[in-house]
Image (cartoon, rainbow, N blue to C red):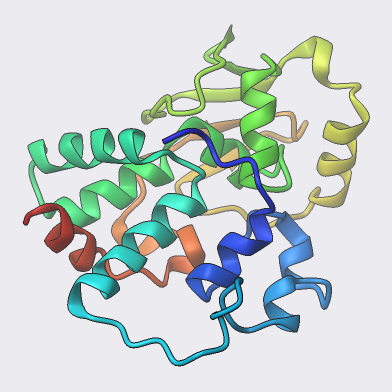
Length: 211
């Protein structure tokens, strides 16, 4: 399945929750889900009965779409999480939370996951002083994530830094006083995962892939 390039607001409406794919716009009155609290399409306002499989599928789609991953990429992350010690569901969510593009967003270098991914792909982000253009790169304890020196004057990046100068960050990462770099202090816990606002039933995803 190719990368989705359509209107991202439709994804939120389809899943019935805010995926925060447009950053702060999702918190405003302009959010499409605030205006149309039903799935897109001509049958969106009809009654929808969810089977057990349907619930599992929607939970998986909700998480997968919140990080803009393809099905193939998501399955790879699930298999890696399943091979690690501990609950598979929690492992999966922590792996998704520590993707480079997600950490760039958490550090407020990007206003949304989509914007953060573009910053990574366009080589504006460095990990341990080396350019990294792989959004799925998993950050580790002690990694330093910074904005490339040549990119610090880009208006979009400057605006993000100014607007989020005093933003509260997750406890497992920190930003330096210059606000242009951050450090991974430790691996986040399951409770610190904030994908889709943290409202995730990961056991449904495990059940779906375990069939």
